[in-house]
Image (cartoon, rainbow, N blue to C red):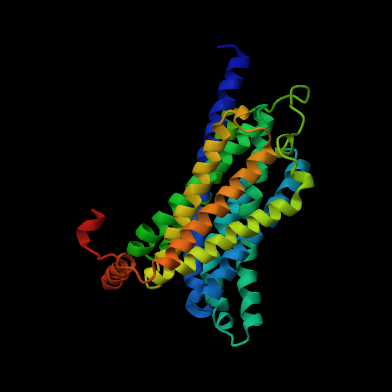
Length: 346
């Protein structure tokens, strides 16, 4: 096989490996989020305020990490090694997080809300920063391996979000229910370590070569189809509304499922699954389907607003209906946890 074909084959294998790694990384991230959310609420509280704070801090850390990761990716001569280091750092923090939580547990239950919030922030900020840094770094890696930047970004976002959705379900209904919170966190740390080791092994074994500077495509972004840089307010508002919807839906559904410990992870699963499916569907649509990216953006937001109005209105209109009352009765008769049988794990 010619050398150029071997190099191309190695790059394709490595690209596939990166996508699989990002899928598993998303799953590990939700292992952490679901587990840490439950551990933090042991002393911090299980009310809607504490849940909202945990979700908000997670998203803030991911966003800030993405900004920092983009800066580091541009400055790094070898973003693959940078990605490996981040996965190792996540594995180390995950493995030590239980001991750190035990250390700050008394302060999480402090009567002063500000004091307890500061320690929640100190716990969640470091790992969420690291998680957020991975996307821009991996995008930089793939943009140096092939010239189709936008497709790489769409594929990575889909893989990571789909992994996160499945991770929310597996962690809550499987690992935590039958093995406990500690084991779930250690499983996530093991995934991070295995990913770092596997990517390093694949990188050095296949001797991956980046595109030469003459063949690299000029840096591109979503601004080619939608003027992102000039519409920061719209993007911020969209993110604000997205998380707002998640919190409101959580509180509404929590009424029906009697504050089940599975409510949070179930809503996360549906929420993330929908985002992943929508992202994948839109990336595969013909560009001629919509006139511009701006038209697409406003059309989708109009559809979201319309659906929220209809579904929320139906919910409150049906509160006294027999259907919802039967659902509430069934929910309150059901056990909070799945029944354990020794043969279940065989």
